[in-house]
Image (tube, rainbow, N blue to C red; front, side, top):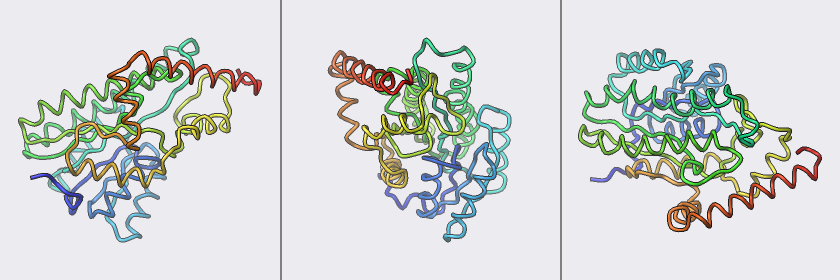
Length: 286
């Protein structure tokens, strides 16, 4: 029988990168739905603030320090949650960073950093929680990718490459996990109003001289959705055990076009990249 939104009631949910942006919004919405939320983030003070806000509002949450690139730390956290709470119902592999700009401006360190966090961080989460969920005979792993993981994304190749990998990992894992009673979904957000829109946020990076104002202006053209609205819509789909979850819904058109008319999507991406480059040149930033 298909789950409803009430499936989060009394659930134990671990959310990485939950101190801000999409992770914070997911944690807050999960708590509103009755889940106990482990707010995991490398920014412990902010995570503690998020957890305190949830508890003050009548929810249930705790903050933990977690660097998702540390596989041992991830495994130890999962073990501790299991010992203290008895199970983990949901893992939201959300932590990620944004590095954008032309590939010509990338350093090897930029590639290594974004792969370590966006891809290996997700893999570390799967490695830590999947055996537990198999042993339980239930659980749901939700990996956060992006529309950049479904369509070509000039100007953010590193981000797109890692998010494509997360989509592929999630689809493959879903097939295998089903044999053990474990569900897997992948979230593919479009433009969402989070700190990442400002040149990558705290840990991200914009290669090339682009101001926060220009980065925001570029994103505003994509009609970003508020993070709290995104979280509600995303969790509705998670509760229905959807495989690929695209929010806002209109981005599904881009995904369909990418599959049915890839040359058209490539042309559109080229046009967008050219327009952004010309805009920045006019502002004396390119």
